[in-house]
Image 1 (cartoon, rainbow, N blue to C red):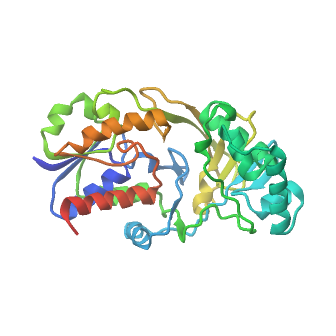
Image 2 (image 1 turned 120 degrees about the vertical axis):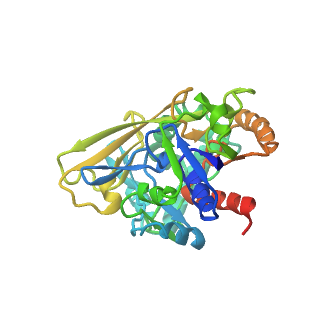
Image 3 (image 1 turned 90 degrees about the vertical axis):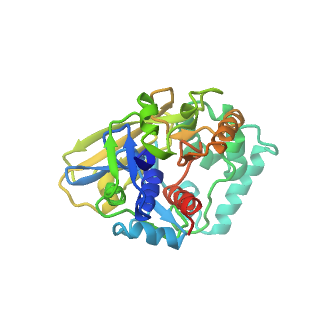
Length: 366
């Protein structure tokens, strides 16, 4: 008999299991995949730690969370400085003075602000009715056309004029020559990949992989006093009120006989014609010097049952639907719901860890 059945060996489940085990509880951790780590899983290919489910860059302003993750492994000094490729033209992201200089030849912040304001006025948009109008009203037409439109339409699989304006509530614009994507104080990549962290978290738990919770639910739930569920909340309730929607991704990996393919870990392709949204070159996350390199092209796609869910579509319809499931979840006495899928919310890694630790405190006290 276990104290906790943890469904999902991703970050939330692993943090909870680690903390529960530290407190003398017995945990069984299961995952339907053949590996631990959920979407932060990294695998060794040609001596390179490949981020199997897309780029994961750890960043936080929370010193406690930073020290927590560093207690499992050392983090390097990687700083996320992605670039955008628009039909062969290279621009820095997020939008900063380097971007504006390349776009317009401006040098001072005042010149850049003036250019953006001119374009916003020329657009004549006062009440944005869709994503396109919202973006133009924030940053003007040039930035929108070259660096937002194509990427966003690929990401969501529909024209920007058909997307709601709330998707882009704000756009980060910096009037400094700073290419650092995140403003957070702490940032880096774990030496040896994220899998090493999860391995340490789960080393004192019983772990079973390739196990589908829903295929043997009754028996599995009967093995523990409580269940920690990190899967899709609508699936947990057998889609009683309907199916929550997501966007999914298809990853295309290539191992290349070259030391350096693109010169940067992340390159976004912002034109509409290129079918993928970005190319990841994994060795640059850890300053690799291997003779070969591994790249991943990311293709956004419509999600359907059976696909891997990545991005919740938090529009009005899905928000109403999730609230119905949340009401059922709140009544559960022996089930804890946590993580991206169970709370239908996009989390960064530090937020997942913080949420798991908050749940641990709620369950066991400080």
